Length: 364
Ligand code: FNR
Image (cartoon, rainbow, N blue to C red; front, side, top):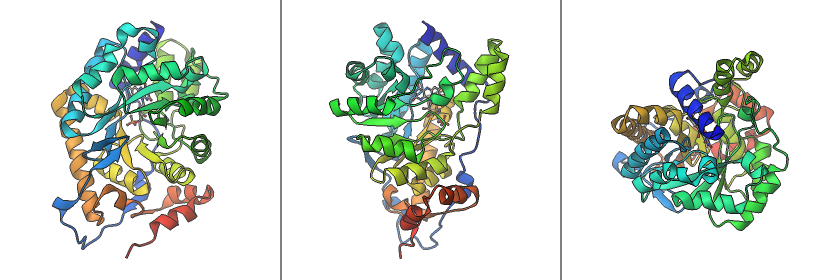
């Protein structure tokens, strides 16, 4: 019940308030235009293979919701659109339905509406530390017949929840245990504060081969909790959250951190991606696929038409950016960007520049 109320709070707050904070730093990335692309736009192939499915473009809607009737409607709308366009989606944390199986339908509806699309199950890292194991993870996967499962890290959010699960000790070992016993791919996913080199490396060393960076610059869960704290009259918590609302690694930097730490992993570039240009930049920095959450939620709320329009525009823009960088497919745009300003300084300071230069050499 408590989980359910909190989830409704989250939906209401994200839809009615400005919950974005920080900066993705995509403004410090410029794609390198090829005046003579030597390609036919019609032959640019935006399809990718991801977790055993073929996507028509490298775009997914990342996990947001489930657990109540409103969420079920949103999941259904997103599912119908991704099925129609040949994209993918995640559902929100399935904890509610694991605790109360009568809520399973609010997640399963995604698979019913999207029988062929890529679907990603979702569970929070704190749950793993509080007793969830392979059994619960398998339940989450089976609930939606998922192609992969995301384990989300949300330490920044938990730190500002009065009821937060704030003990993250032992999470890497716990994930290692689970990965060993699962056939389904596991994605380590942040929720708006980004993944750093050290964390990606540690998870990669225990067998994780997929990351959803969910960097800073889009939805801020610290900011969402700030609104909740103020609503509840928890002034000190609200004020503290307001100071850290732009906490995290900008999405552009996070993609580069993870790509360097785990060069052969699958990277979902997400967090603050609001248009096709930012999506193309994410791919150029090293993401294999991009993820959007808040814009898809808002569009889905406005209706299927609105969401379809947004996703189709993203597809057209990515295809154009591939064409204009002379990239016959999404893999080929990697490295075809110049980074400057604070992003470049970050990459140099963090010791990642040599790696980036390696992928950025002009391909003549
Ligand atoms: C989320 N997000 C999220 N992530 C997750 O792994 N499990 C979850 O249950 C949720 N729930 C959720 C609800 C709502 C309403 C939103 C807007 C987001 C995080 C989401 O997948 C994504 O990582 C971040 O929101 C950053 O992307 P955007 O919103 O900046 O595009």
